[in-house]
Amino acid sequence: MLLPIITYPDKQLKVRSRDVVDFDPTLHTFLDDMFETMLASNGIGLAAIQVANPIRVLILCIPDEEGNQPKENLLEIINPVIHEPQGSVMYQEGCLSVPGFYEDVERYEKLTLHYKNRHGESCSLEADELLAIAIQHEIDHLDGKLFIEKLTYNRRKKFEKEYKKALKEKK
Ligand code: Y12
Ligand code: CO
Image 1 (tube, rainbow, N blue to C red):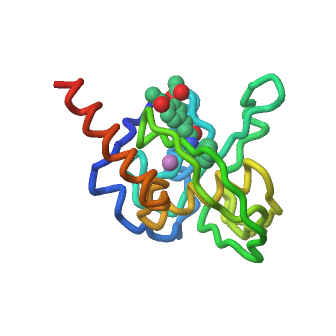
Image 2: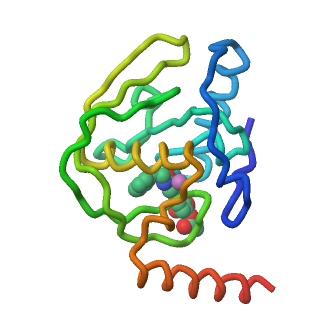
Image 3: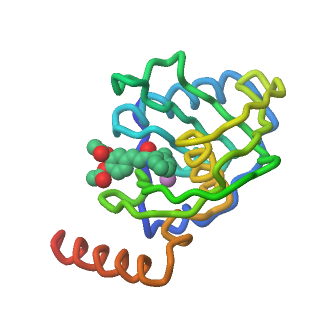
């Protein structure tokens, strides 16, 4: 089932999401719906709060060399905790909750992630490149933060200007 994605400036996006305690069929159906919703919107990452569910769940599916996103490449990440962040890198980010706006954001270059899978089993992974960046972007959603809050002063002003222009064009 496709779920509606909430967009800036919806206040729900500022909520800190709570840990998952029940790894049950309701969670599994929700994860399946998130994947369907993310693919239908051409996303590579989605946090549960973006579909108005304030639980610490995110999914990521980094496209392969042909641009495909097979389900085998899907990462379902629950109650994530970042360990050993290293380095820094700038990358142009986009977000399904801030459509039409892309801007450079500074992130850690590499990290280790501890998390649970859909069955509540403890997992860990080491991430760099786009995966590390997307993990940090999605964990920020779980903490009620959008990437536009990490922009430099001038880039944030650029966003405000473009957002106001887009609002006017909609009317
Ligand atoms: C850097 C950091 C984090 C990510 C993962 C989360 N972002 C996305 O998956 C964003 C996808 C996106 C897709 C859009 O739709 C189309 O392009 C058709 C989109 O729409 C518009 O801009 C109108 C916006 C964002 C990725 C990279
Ligand atoms: Co986002």
